[in-house]
Length: 415
Image (cartoon, rainbow, N blue to C red; front, side, top):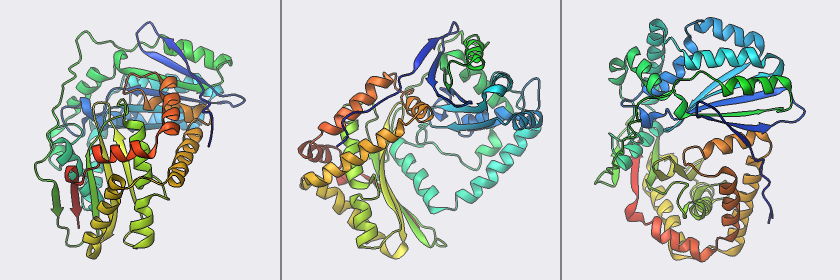
C-alpha cells in the first residue's frame, strides 16, 4: 500500500482588498492558469437561473468591449476562457501563454468586474437555455436527478430547487445586474494562479491582481439559513411512456466533508459503488446484466451533502434491479467487508489521491474543493490520506448501520 502523499503546498498572498491569491508553481512551462472563484452559486440566488446566467453572460461584454471583440482578441492571443459553477461557487478560468498573460488577464478582469449584460445577448442566452431545457426535461435521468434533489432538500431550498419553464419568462437583465453587484465582490473572491512564479510576466500579474479594483460590500451579506424539508413520501414514480429505459436514483441527506465520518464513508461508498470493481457494478451490471453502468457517490456542499446511487435499466427489470441494489446495501450492514477487498479499495483510493495531486494544475482543482469549508488545505488532505489507511472493516460496518438504513433512503424511478 502507498505510504506517503506528496502535496504541493501553495503560497498565499493576502491582498489589501481582503481576498487571497493562492500561488502554485509550474516549472519549465510557459502556460499560466488563473481561477477566479466567487461565492456566487445557486445557494446565494433568490431564484433559479440567476447565478448561472450571470456567470454565462460575463463574456458577452464589458463597459469597454462587446462579446465579439472579447472572443476575437482572446482567440488571437491563444488564450482560453472557461466558466463553471456548483451549487455554491462560480468560477472563471483563464489559460494563457506567459507572453500574452498581461493583456489576457486585463481582458478577463474587465468583463468580470464590469460586465454590461447586453439585453439582446441576454435574450438570445435565455432562448438557447430554454430550448436546451425542453430537450433535457424529456430525459429520464434528468427528471430523476431533479426529483431526488427536490424530495431530499425541499423545492424551496437552493440545493433542491430546479429550473422550471416559467423561470425563463420571469428572470430579467436587472436580476443579473443585482446578483453581480451583491456577489461578485472582494469578500467572496479567491484567486488561484498556477505558473512559473519566477518569471517577470507572472510576477507582474501577481502585483496587478493584488491591487485589483474590485468592489467591497458595505452591508452584511444575507447568508440565509435555509431549512431542509425532506418529503414525507420516500418512494416516487414518474411515468414516462415513451421512454425505453427507466432511471433509478436512490439517496438520502448525508454529511459533508467537514464531518468526522466523511472519509470512512467515502471508503464505504467506494466499496458499494464508487469504482468500476464495486459491488453494485459486479452485481447489477456484470452478474445480472440489468444495466450498462451503475454508481454511487457522496456529494458535498458547503452547507449539507447527500448520498446517491444512480443507474438506468430496462423498464421490465426495475423491481429486480432495486432488489439487487438494496441487497448490496444490506450486505454492508450485516457482513464484514473481507480484508482483501478492503485493501484493494484503499489502494484504489490512495492511488487516485496521488493522481489528483500530480502537478500544479491538478492540485489547484483539489485546492478549490476546500474553499467551501474554511479548512486548511494541506492538513485536510494529509488527514484524508491517513484516515483511509487506518479505517477498518468493523468501523465501516457500523457506519453502514448508522447511515445506510434502507428505510432512510429516498427512491426515485422515472420511466
